[in-house]
Length: 422
Image 1 (tube, rainbow, N blue to C red):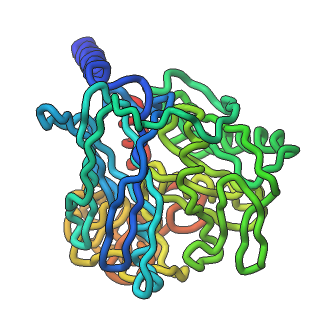
Image 2 (cartoon, rainbow, N blue to C red):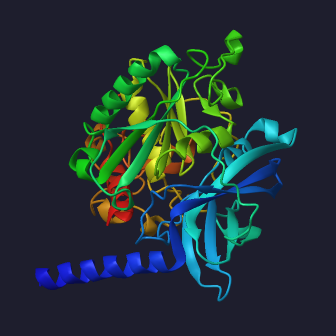
């Protein structure tokens, strides 16, 4: 039986790779667009198409099976409308829409979708998830791969190094670490930091049993100044990626609006995930699913920040805490099931972790000593105290009082690793 199963998996892999080679080149097509609006409206505007030299994604699992994220990109064969590629993702704009500022003004953000470089004309469609968690078609753009307006000149070309290598990028999770606020004289420190964070990654389960499923790259790209921006302290440093604390006026939220620089720098290697490492001792970070993740390099909790934010950026895990103040208003619709695998409103709990809850564990689950170490349904999560539920009393997606993920988050991470590597 095992031999037949092995043969089936080998055949499926060969078939999937043949499908890739039929429709795609082994490089990336990048579509940049502007995404604007306010709390109630959104608009998409085409910017440019770029050709990038590497494809780091799977060549077999081309169609997304998770449907996580606030947005979903689909690439169709123009000649017959067949689906060639899809991925879910989120953006900074989607978070901004839930802030009080979005009720007062309109803003625009540069964003990107990437997919394997097609051999023939394709139609790219972007879908937005509405408040009821339903995807709605929002943007369409036709692309001819022979169009001479597709940009081939590279921006921000820098050397790279391997912090960790396990094999073929198309069969691994490829993480590229981008330096932010490291001066030319601090590139040695950046190399050491990449290796330290690589080692730290594999100290956490389930990454610890998946070392052979990851490649980790670093880009040797210095900034003019050390550190990054801290607006409330009137600190403005000249850095390559323009990250800043106080994103959305939240002190510890450290992100960047400079999408093009992030993507330009990441394009030096094949990548699935982008991680920005900021050279500062200040506590903070941030991450958005299939967009980018950020953490600091030398805060005493840097290792936990790194692993927590990767949970967002890579596996689509939601924040399970609710006591910290945030800028968000009505982030979740309590009458719909959130897409994050570790949060539920109990609207469709069957689709979440109900299979992991023992029969004698009540739903919802009392947050008492009796159920402290059990998988259940604990009220409080997703930034609110009522109506959103998390899987356990505590977890790395909830607080740093513990130093491990709960079983539900572990399963979510492992499923995502399998998707990239199988």
